[in-house]
Image (tube, rainbow, N blue to C red; front, side):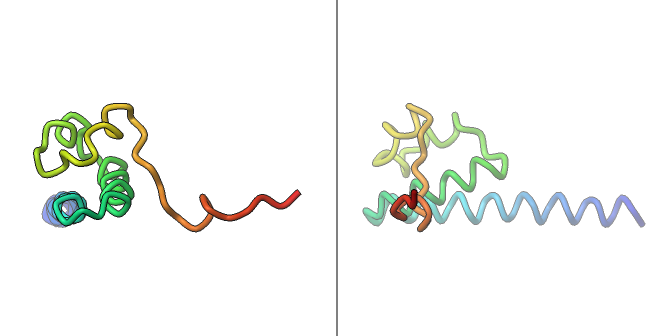
Length: 84
């Protein structure tokens, strides 16, 4: 029973990785570079290999950023003014 549950968990994780990665590809192909970078960063954090993203022609518009290893996050905190 445990192996079956574990198998489903692995499959769910793999599916989630694929969905997030493919969303990043769709954003990149649609010209939404900022969204693509944010989303591919999430996919990389989920375990997608950086080499895969760098080699993927669907992500060509963000290859420079990926090659430098700086997928840019665009969350609100990154743009919030500093309070001293």
